[in-house]
Amino acid sequence: MLKNGNARVLPRSKYFSLAVTSLGVLLLNIDLFVMNVALPTIGKTLNAPLSTVSWAITAYTLMIGIFPASAGKLSDIFGEKKLYLAGITLFTVASFACGISPNVFLLILFRALQGLGAATMIPGTLSILIHAYPEKQRGLAIGLNGGIGGIGIVAGPILGGLLVHGDNWRWIFFVNVPLGIVTILLTLLFVNEQQISQASKKIDWKGLIILSIGLLFILLSFTQAEKSGLHSDSIFFLVAGLALLFLFIRLERRVSEPLIDLTLFRSIYFTLPCISMLLFSASLFGSQPYWSMFFQNFWGFSPFWGGLAFLPATCLIALLTPVAGIIGQKSGNRLRYVVMFGALITSISFIYAADINTESSYITVLLPSLLIRGIGIPFLVSSTSLMMMNSVPSNKSGLAAGVLNMSRNVGTSLGVAVLGPLFASDTGRTLSSLSKEFPGGDLSKAKELAAQFSVIKNSTAAPFAETAIISGFGHLALFCALALIPVFLSALTLRKRRKKN
Image (cartoon, rainbow, N blue to C red; front, side):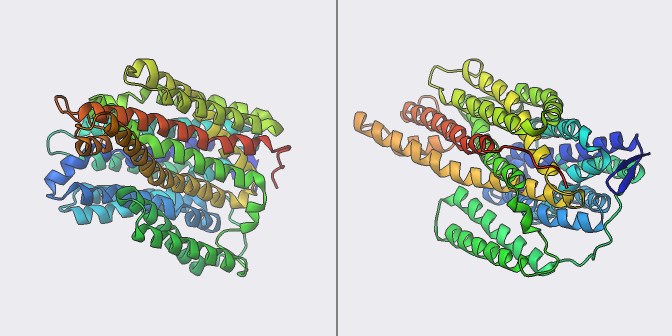
C-alpha cells in the first residue's frame, strides 16, 4: 500500500480512479454540447418553439455554474466517492428521463436535474485524483484526465450529428445510461474513499442557499443579455446576484464553519487559477458558438462536418495534455512559465483567426488557428489546475476543484453574454458604414443575416452581410486574444510557488 495524506491507496486503484474520473468528465463535456445540433429536431417533435427548447441547454449550464463549489464543500465533508456516486447516479437517471420526456417542459426539468448531477460530480473529478496519486504524479494524472475529458468538447456535436436522424433525438440522452452504469460500477469497485476529517460535519445551509441564488441571478443576467441585450431584466438579475454574493461573503466571515473558506483567496496560487480559468473560458467557450455558426451558416458545413472541423485541435489537446501535465509537474517553482506559455499561445491562435477576410478558407486561416490553439490549451488548463490543487490542503481539495470549475462555467456564460453584444455592435457599425457607400442596399435584411452568420445567394443583402460577418468575427477573435493578456501578466508577477500545506 501507498500512503497519500490520511488515506491509504492501493497502487492499482489510482489507474481505475483516473479511468472513472476521465469517463465522468467525458460524459459531462459531451452533454454540454450534444444538444446543439438536435434543437430543431426536438422543437419539431415536441411542438415547441426554438426559444423554449433552448432552455434545455440553459437549464443544464445554469446548474453546472451554480453548484460545483457547494458540492465541493460537501465532498470534503462526506467524502468525494459518495458525492461522485450520487452525482453520476442522478446524471444517469436524469439522462434516461430526458430521453423519454413527452413534452418540452419535462425535458427542461430533467435537463436541470441532469445538470445538478453533473455539478455534484465535478469536484470529484479532480479531488479523487488528488487523493489517489502522490503529489509528484499529479501533473500527469490531471493531464490525462483533461486530455480524455477534452475529447467530449468536440465529440458532443459530432455524436449529436450521428445520433440525430429524422425525428429521432432521444438517443443523445439514452447513450449516457450504459456509460453511466459502467462509471458507477467502476467507482464502487475500485475507487477508495479518503479518510474523512473528524471535524464537525455541520453544513452552512444558509450560505449554500444565498450563494446558489446569487450565482443563479448572475448567470440568468448573462443569459438574458445574450438573448435580448442589456435590458432592465438582465440588469436587475445582475445587481441582485452581486448583492447576494456580497451578503454571502459577509456571512462566511462570521460563521464558525463556512461553506467556502475565504482565506484560501488570500493565496495568489489559489486566486490566479480562478481568474485564469474564468478569462480562458470566457474567450474559448464563449466564442465557440460563433465558430460553429461560421462553419455551418457562413461556409455551409453540415453539423457533422462542422463538428469535425474542430477535430485537429481536439486531437492535439488530447495528445498534449498529458505531456503538459508532466512538464507542469516537473517545472516546480517555474510553473508560472507554463501558465504564461499556454496563455500566450492560446492568445496567438485568436490573433491568427482575427486576420480572416473574404478570401480566407478553412485551410488557410481557421485550421492553423485551431492547431495553434490545440498547443496552447493543454499547457494553460493543466498548469492552472495543478497550481490550484497544490495550493490547498488535501482536506479542501473538493472545495478547490468545485471553485475552479465554477470559475470556468461562470466564465463561459459571461463570455457568451459579452461577445454577443460585441458582435452585434461591430456588425451594426460595419453596416452603417456601408449604408453611406451603397444607399440602395437592403441593410435591414443584411443585419438579420449577419446575426445568424447567414449569407443567402442571389440576395441584394448578401454582400453587405458577408462583409459585416467577416469584420465581426475577426474583431471577436481579437477581443478574445486580448482577454488572455491578464492571465499572462498575472502569472508574470509570481515569484515562488507556495508549498502545499
